[in-house]
Image (tube, rainbow, N blue to C red; front, side, top):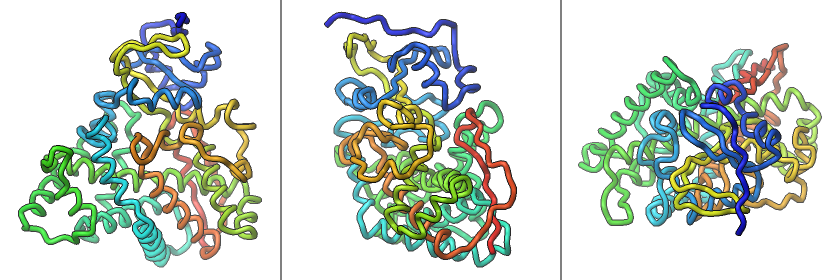
Length: 410
């Protein structure tokens, strides 16, 4: 196969441009080079950028890319932790992924919805009028996550859990004190969970054997060995943290309710299907995390482009979800685009792409949908509210977005 010259961005490093441009960084280069594959430089390292459906399919080819040591150290030390399922490949990844998938049964997801409704009702019972959506959903989802995972907690410590879990995803893109604060909280949480896992294994802590805490404490890897207490702690945090992170989607969901009130009327009149389309469009339209990382397993040629072994590669999630080659009028908010929509594993990737069972697509996507479905149902049908005057703007370089919506309960 003949070689093609991959577009290369000139300059020593483009990390500052990434911080300035945020979610538009990858798409700006796609448009600049008229190419969905290009090379840039971030944190002093050569990086391949990929945007689009075919490029996403390439990114998830385990014969060509590996996740081990792909995420930058600052991301591992705040968002994912070291040794978690996101950084595994092959047999080891599939074995541990099976454990995560076993937690996503219909009964489990139904229980999640019941917990969400219970915790929203508890919080709303103590809300007089003004509700800060992001803060409220963080409290609700923290309590849901702790109960669902079987983590013992004191009521007076819930606010500490909220703050610490929130910092793990809010400050991933920050440099300086906020980043170091997030690292401190991850280390603190991991240490506490390590000790809890050891107590469970030693029979010194009685916990529900149907809960995640017990499952991960007693889980054995593909070689029949217990996970180290630290890795078990990392994996438990990797369910607690993303559950609370769904508060980001709730925040932008309320922004969409305010900006597109006609969609709220559709949901009230048309019911569940309209609500489902609305949630999917929120996940497609609004940004969350901008991209995912992998490294080239062995040097290979794809569409004439050479990918060198070991090179960091980023898949643009936001850009692919706004790719005009996939989505008609991608910059319009239009839930009706999901009428008769045929889902594919590589075109709609708000939380990653690929196959759920054996690939790297996040099993927490099902959990995300249940949290959003129940929350939307509560506020569409059970809780009357209005929007006071507010900005609700999203900055393109604010990762994750923070419109910080406020509603007044009637």
